[in-house]
Structures are given as C-alpha cells and as structure tokens.
Image (cartoon, rainbow, N blue to C red; front, side, top):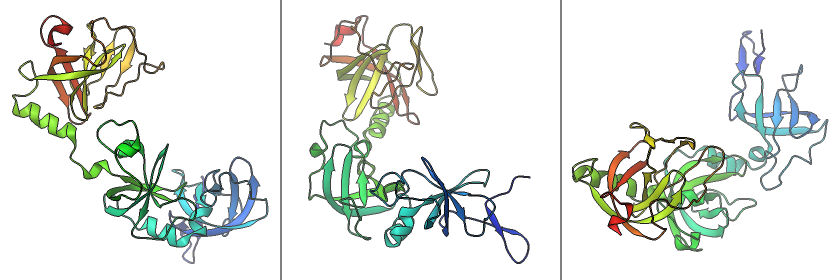
Amino acid sequence: MRRRVSEGDSSGFPRAVRVGDVVEGVVASVGRSARVTLDGFPTRPVGEIGPLDTPWGRGRATDLAVGQRIRAVVMTVGPDGERAGLSLAAAAYPELWAFLSGLQPDCRLTGTVASIESYGVFVALDEGPAHPVFPGVGFITYAELSWTRFESASEVVRVGQRVTCVFLQIDTWNGEARLSLRATLPDPFLAFADAVDAAGGEGRAVTFRGRVTKLTPIGVFVRVADGVEGLVPVEGADVSDETGRVVVPDRGDVVVGGEGDVAVGDEGEVVVENEADVVVGDQVHVVVTRVSREGRRVVLAWVGAAAGSGR
C-alpha cells in the first residue's frame, strides 16, 4: 500500500498535510526542484520546492543547499497524497500571504494603476500590504483589461488611474492577486446575443454590417459589434451546432472564439489569399447563422450570392 503525506497522531490515525499548512524540514536534494524531508516524515523527502517557489522575485531555487533547514507553506498536495508542493515565498512574507489567501473569488478590489508593462498592468491595492518586489500586489493580464481589442494597454488605463477590479485567483509564483478589469464592464458578446434573439433569433433574417478584420484558411472574420467578431466559414466547412467548432476538409479542427481567435491544427494562424474577393477593412453585410453563448462563438454567412455584395 502506498503511503500518503501524513503523520501519525495519538489515536493511531494519520493526519494529512493540508494546503495552507506551515511546515519545516531539511533540504534533501537540489536539482531543477529541491526535495525536502519534512519534520515528522523522516523516511523520505515528500516536500518539493519548485524553481519558481523561492521568495518572490528571486527566480530559481539556486540559493538552496542540501542540509539547509527551511520553513514553507504547503501550496499543493498531489492526487496520490505522496508529494507536497511547498512555497518559501509564502512563509517569507506571512502578512502578504495571509492577505492573499483570505481573498474570495469574484470579490471586488480597488486600487491605483502603479505600472504598465508589456506583459500586464500592476495595481497598488488599497487593502493589504505592499509587494516586496513588484509595483503592486494586484496584476491584470492584457486579456483581462477589456472586452474589445486594443493596440496598447495605455488605450485602456493610465498610471495613476483609480480602478475597481474583480479578483480571479492567487498567482502563487509571484505573490500577486490576479484581477480582471473587464469583468466589471458589460459583456458585449452577451449584449450581441440578446440583440440577435430580439431580432428573431439565428437565421438569415438577422443581418449585420461589419468590418472584415482577418482572413484565415478557414474563413473570414467580421466584426459585427464592438468587442464581437464572427466567422464566415469557407465553403464546404462543417460547423457543429453545439460548440461552434469548424471542421474544414484537409485543414483540421478549428475552434472559433468570440473575439476571432483561431488555431489551425498545429500550424497556427496563417493569412491566405482571400477566395471571396474581400480584404481586411472592407465593410460587408452578413447574417448570423449561429450564436453559442457557452462557447462565445458567432458563425456568419454572406448576404446574397457573392461575398462582396455588401461592400
């Protein structure tokens, strides 16, 4: 029988190590990750410190040495109960970890935009301690800034701006609260889906004029509303009723996202010559043939026999 990450108590029953426990032990080996023999588990090293689980901002666990005593917080316990993922960072900054671990999903946090970087936006939160390394404890990825496309984050926020965001989850590697600004704004996809329903539902009766935004091997993407793009599939494509998945013969399965994201097999997105004689920027008329609220997908068709008839 395989042993679990547990230690005996006076009753003889095991008490498992739980996520959030503060534990101590001795480093048994150091490689890409460090293995730790935890106090109370002398037979084998069940703790593991990953390369990103050292104090925040210090990167790989290069400062760990065999025989070194450590104090860490249990972040994960493997499904087989034989491995406990540890974080030195959470133990090194207990006040910050206590604040982060006390946040509830979907709660709202306020703060000030502290820095705009190429990989996201830092927010200095009104509550909780400051971050020991980064400009703010709150962090917004570009995808969570806005429902609509933008070229630069400065089009959405500016340094010094006050923001209210929805808390998504803890980034345990960086000691951050991952936030969403767009979750506080009306979802244009849902508004579009409601408009389609109000106009009579899916079918050729619902006509929109939109701008061609992208030409791909599986069809033409058209922006039919702010923050909403749909796909006019290439001729012969098979579109699933339930998911909006597009299957093009000899071109693989393609999942079409509500904002026009596309992947073709393992080849990625490829721009090809447009067979329908439209180019990016053209204004075209399309009809909505399918809206998947769950999948956030819109499938379109051309109005009339020719693709360019709405130009």
